[in-house]
Image 1 (cartoon, rainbow, N blue to C red):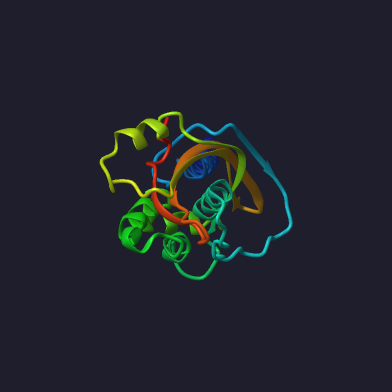
Image 2 (image 1 turned 45 degrees about the vertical axis):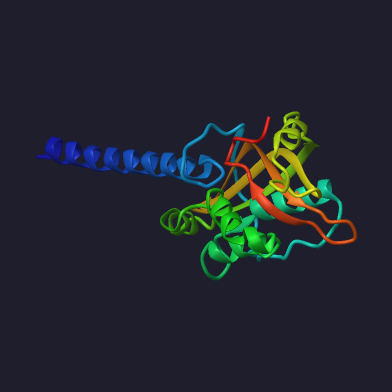
Length: 215
C-alpha cells in the first residue's frame, strides 16, 4: 500500500511540474510574440527577476511637430507602447495614432495600427500577466526606394509634402508571473509615411506592414 501511495504522490508531483513548465513556456510565448502580439518570434533577450510593482502607463497624445524624422519617432513610440493594466482595451492605444492621422487616411491608418496591436483575445490573455510594452528607437533613415517611388508616381498620387522614414529599434515587453518579472526584447523596423505641409504639423498617411519596412 505504501508503494502505491508513493507512486500516486510521484505522479501528482510530476504532473504539477509539467503544468508549471507549460505555463512558463506559454507565458514566454505570449511575451515573445511579434509586433501585434499574434505571431511568435524569437526574442533577442529574455530574463526573469523580482521587481517592485510599476504603475500602469496610459495612452498619451502624439505631440505635434513639422519635422518628419521627429514625427516618425513619436509615431513609432506611440504605436509600440502600451500597457494592458490600463483601463479598457487596445482601442484606446490605437486611437492615439489615429488622432495623428491625415483626415482622408484615418480609416486606413486605423487598420494599419491594428496590425501592430494584439488582437482583443490576445490582449485579454496578456492582461492576465499585466503585460506592458515600450519601444526604444535606435536609428532612422529615409528608405532608398522612396525617391524612386516619388519619381514613378503619377501627378497628385503622392502629396508633395509627403515623407517616408524607417524607424529601427527594440521592443521591450514585460509581464509578471507568480511574482516573477519576465522580460523579452525583439528587434522591430517599420516605415512611417507622413505628410508635413510647410508651416503645419505632420500627420500620418500610412504605416508599413509589421516587419516589412520600405527598403
